[in-house]
Image (cartoon, rainbow, N blue to C red):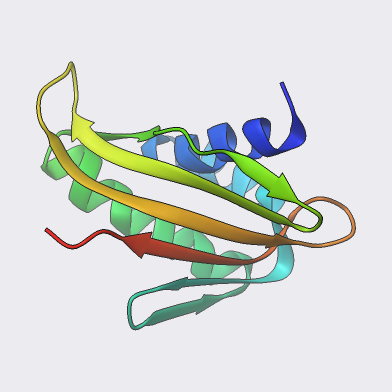
Length: 122
């Protein structure tokens, strides 16, 4: 598995992770300390705020709505950039509820410096 494929798998998995301690550890493993996440009008900076962002999404989409996030192909790396597609589906199968694209700019150590999360229009 390439670095880009591993990063995409771990990135998507973190949104599904129910254990707060595991999410916290994975935030630190995936993003640099002052990493930035952009989605729509939301802008999140640093590990503490990234943890809140992931936990909030998990609560709304996984715990309450019974969805699951998956890598949906398109994983590519070009120099310090990784991009991949994702989808949100019902746990245990079912229709695709949302799709999108992640574009991540990496730091020298391979962790995410900045990521842009695009959600496809309904």
